[in-house]
Image 1 (spheres, helix red, strand yellow):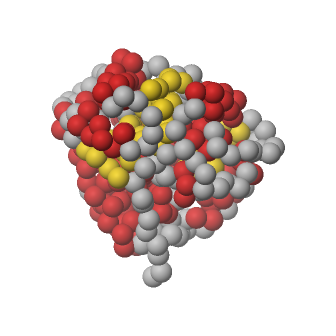
Image 2 (image 1 turned 45 degrees about the vertical axis):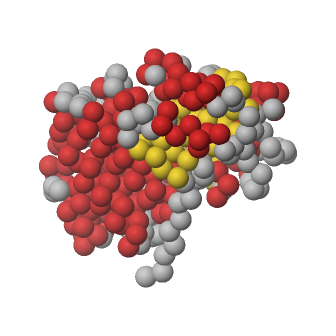
Image 3 (image 1 turned 90 degrees about the vertical axis):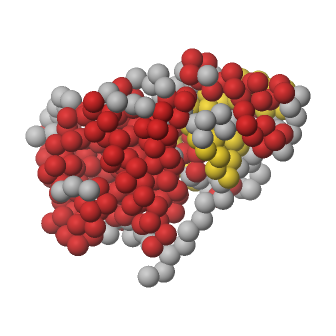
Length: 363
């Protein structure tokens, strides 16, 4: 099998790894733009970053207007602030939304986009980025993807280029100490979905599979702990490292129809991205078991359980699920069938197949 593996991100892990590696921040210039949401001021990550920058004698501005599911208008505003303040690098703090927004901001600060950002050919001139995840889900700290709300097409759309890889990532589970249970569940299931979908990708290879299996080993052990409310320092670090490993997987493999179906749930109903993936993944795996049983068996081995037991565990974590009409599900299947992720799966899925997955997920 031919494959390629590439993740050019320095990863630092462990307690106080931000404050302990001030020299990494010092490499990238005297002025930073910090891109974040509102929670980083509460979890201690923002104060740690500001302390490091001040100790280094680096100036900074803060852009903390990133909403859940960042918009084009949001990243354009952040890029304008980067240019106005003369930012030489970007520090992203938060979950997937601030980290994805930071990538688009770092690109827009240096490149003149004519027309639609989603059709722009991304060049090499991008502000360097340092990422500090404060949730364990997206793995954006080690990927080249930025997912933005695309109102024109009424979905979420990715922009991607090798130049959007961050320079470094800092993994410190202490920033997740007070993370609400709902967000902990949603982001953990997002990470599980990334690892599983990576193994289902046509671009999967020996290296990505090894990372996916290790990711699932770390994550599966914490799902039960999350349900019990047992979130120790070690549990938080395991979740964070499992999510980062899963990010390394999809940086090379991409995702599958699970993401394509989930985008409609997020865009039209505001369902959190990780929850959407969690709602869909068990039903999708059942469909894959009928189409590619050997590969699905390998995934179940990595999950340490069978599909039915996995479905029960996920259902217990998610609680009561949303309901949709048949017309809505058919519309979402049609949208998902047009997503490029459909062709990235080892199993072929028609529009009718996707509709079946959606029906089973929300029966």
